[in-house]
Amino acid sequence: MPADRSRPGTPSSPRRSPRHPPGRPAGPPHPWADALLEIAFHRASKAAGSGDSSLNRRRSQAHRKVARSAAVLLRQLRQAEGPLHRLEDLSGFSRALLEDRYGPGGIERSLLRVHRAQERLLGFRTEEEKRLARADAPYAFGGSVRRFYGRAASVLFEVERDLARLKEAQALLADRPGLGGALPALPVVGYPNVGKSSLVTRLTRARLRVAPYPFTTLTTAAGHLALRPGVQTPLVDTPGLREAEGRSSHAAEREALLALEHSGPVALFLFDPSGRCGWSMEEQEALLTRLKERFPTRRFVEVENKADLTRTASGRRKISCETGEGLPGLVEELRSLVRETGGEALPPLPPLRETLDEVPGREPGAAQTPRNGSR
Ligand SMILES: Nc1nc2c(ncn2[C@@H]2O[C@H](COP(=O)(O)OP(=O)(O)OP(=O)(O)O)[C@@H](O)[C@H]2O)c(=O)[nH]1
Ligand SMILES: [Mg+2]
Image (cartoon, rainbow, N blue to C red; front, side):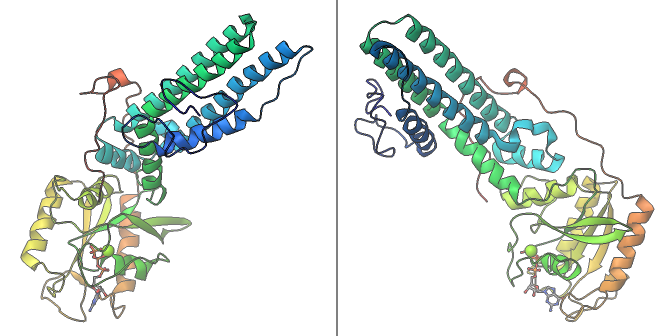
């Protein structure tokens, strides 16, 4: 690795300290790019030359250094794309989640930039290979290798943020249920602290975090429930909701609404009439009304939890996740509803925009700020 961006180091001495290389220009650190360059240049440093003369051996060694470091970097960049490489294969929910976190087209742009970085690396490699074929002095061989290393480093630094984002996005999706696919999911929604995670934990083998305060759950998670013969319906625990419009500054709340949007035709709305959750029944009723307006085709199963504490005079089903009261009856109701609605998945989403030019509101290559990257 070059010791200086403008004057790359010798090919036989790859960078030793990726985080603090001497002469590094001021600016943000590049942990991703540094790590990849470190691997590539280290592997390249081990390349030996072959040939019938000293000149040809040195030429061949330089050629192998360029080819080997390029191959390592290209492979690493492809790996950084991971499953995001085929965005269209992701579930509707996953795609909506990515759009929510990184803005419309945010991930597409990062993928495109990483893709272009690969093309540029290929171009630089070809250029140096041609130069090496023509060169006839050792200093020119070294020059080719140094030039390639320097250019490769610049390309990697340019896509540093994209690499970090792609990694983060993959981690984000790794522990989310793939809603919006062929199998319709059944989300459990409601105000925070009403007992949604307790219910999913009670009815399925999922072991979710339950605690006596709001916003314990910050991401969706699914357990599975046999509601149709041979089919396990994902029962989706969602973060607590306080509004139905999806304008919340809280990423977890927006995620709950996205889960509802990308689930099947039946959803379970859980009330806590005891007031222990921190919200009144009037507030909870108002939320359900707004959700019904926003999702008019959704069939909401209305259930009152914490029956061991409070029982209202309403005709709604009463359950207690504490004692288990009412749970078998609830499962029967869900089973017959899923049978009745056919358990059909929502229609598939339209295909994703494929190229940068088709992504709205963005200049090619412009920096992208996540709409809300934190939870
Ligand atoms: N007494 C009683 N407490 C319950 C019942 N169900 C849940 N709880 C308690 O209510 C609190 C909240 O339960 P959670 O399951 O974490 O609620 P949640 O809706 O997932 O909460 P968030 O993830 O914050 O939205 C916990 O202390 C539970 O033990 C119940 O039927 N009876
Ligand atoms: Mg919860």
